[in-house]
Length: 284
Image 1: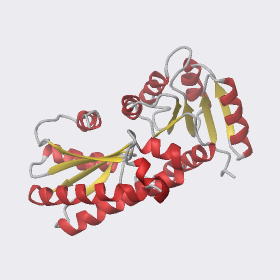
Image 2: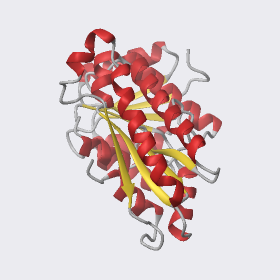
Image 3: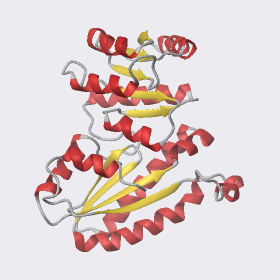
Image 4: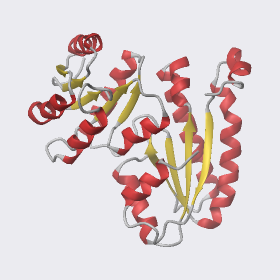
């Protein structure tokens, strides 16, 4: 059961989905409010003051991206966690969701147990004032921005962008517990490889739930980059059940790792926001 009657606002135009989520989260002990239109979602966010918002993207009037933008631009609602729940599966849609300030992004059809845990994790982050990802334990948000800002304003740092591709497809096939295990394992491999290579002034954090940023001294980065690329690529088969590995190797949406050098950022950016945007929109 949820603690202290947290309030959930659900912005969803499908009446069946809205009704199901309303009933489910009420049973879990939440106070639930539902609206079907984007404009109503913005108003409800301001008047209800929910602890978390579950937001569809395709709405009858303004879309969920615009709802999120308005909520993030209002001091009364800018800190409320937003979880997008949508049929939009393309990478560009996910990036747009995170760009407008979403805390999480789940595609339909979805596992309601997964959604419940995502809600719980988001609320836990807020209540504890946590600055770390609840799955990997790595820094995210303001802690990452602090290090990106230092790289922008101080020379002598190299950046590496590591991302997990097709984790959504893996989650749909094997469930959220298995996908979280993948995220934790990859995070640990990156962390351990940094410890082997670096002198200690390094940083590892999340740009998004499936994107990592590594910041370290340039002379260590070349060795680290080649070692981590090899280790991660060799590990991918083992995330699949033995019976599926041969089939998985031929899938167009098989798990993949992208390791991309970031051009020097010192003096090239005036804000962390612009650097984040460039990193997350970089083709992979």
